[in-house]
Image (cartoon, rainbow, N blue to C red; front, side, top):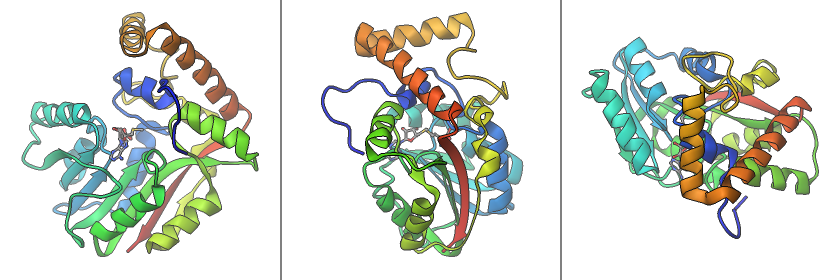
Length: 266
Ligand SMILES: C[S@@+](CC[C@H](N)C(=O)[O-])C[C@H]1O[C@@H](n2cnc3c(N)ncnc32)[C@H](O)[C@@H]1O
């Protein structure tokens, strides 16, 4: 849903401000599974849509010898990921650029594999994101996404309020499947229950497998994050982040929110 009124930091904003390397539930275990289902092999051309800090793009290239293009709307993310690629000595095989996932800056039929980890539900039009992912994939190319997915029927009011706090719009499993099909994705398979256990939502760090994004941060990390939130959004921003976090984890613990991995072909 579109956000209205004065902009207040969402759970997604707080995670990004926290400087955490992997910005999705399931952490690196899910990134590894994504690579496995994508059948990455040396020389393939991969597009990592909404590549964030570039952690996954670098992993794909390092582990499988693939050539990766990462695209993200945030200039700051692109700067950080480019510098991470240089530090890793992978700048010849992994490149990052700015762009909107709803209108990708690439020719059609360009990539063997197109991946979007945890960012189809963020822009206003998730259907456009999927359509674009399919457009730039080669015929027969693989399309993979993982996304926040409702595990129960909830009222529209509850869903809307949650999306506003989370900063992304979860959908029901059937809705994601319908949108992927509408975009032209064929032979869709998915994994839902194993990625929906509450501890998956605590697993968002690369170096520490089970870790709540904020409460298990070290004290210096916490202070740095709070300072950044305060300077961007003021005291009310800090209060909003705390409330959003509480609602987020309550929703997960009540078993309402899960997480699903989807794979299909163009
Ligand atoms: C939850 S993070 C996921 C980052 C990375 N894929 C990962 O799993 O660690 C969402 C990312 O989507 C990016 N993003 C948000 N809206 C976007 C858009 N319209 N086009 C491209 N990227 C976008 C953000 O800048 C952020 O880096």
